[in-house]
Length: 90
Image (cartoon, rainbow, N blue to C red; front, side, top):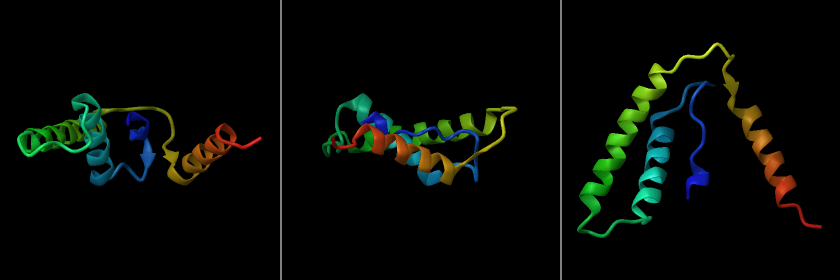
């Protein structure tokens, strides 16, 4: 599950709220061991997602770097190339 969590820092344009929420959701899924909570755990599950997303937003806003921002399209192309190489059929 955590393979879906991507680096969100130092991109232009900056990470969206949806991206931050998706990363928080993946984290909570991994930690809790469930992709969909039961009705009994639904409230605490989604509250944790919201809190982690909120804190992640603060983290991203506070991080500084001297490196130039990465381009999303270039990074996506690199990831596709790595995936194609990794999963290429012989």
